[in-house]
Length: 71
Image (tube, rainbow, N blue to C red; front, side):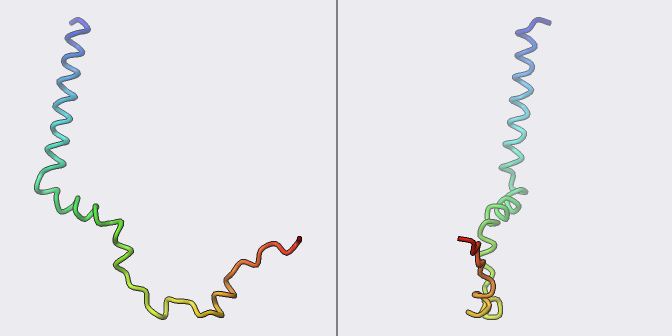
């Protein structure tokens, strides 16, 4: 088997693998999973912040970093 035949077989195998991945990605059974994955960046925006989650002004001052006072 010469190098040209080997390269041709390798190219054919890679093409078949590529077509298999494309068929898997665009199959109807995978659509729901991909739609859920596409909406993951927006998942945090759906959570509502309640008043108990917010800090009072006194708590905010206590949490602030005072920094280095050596000037």
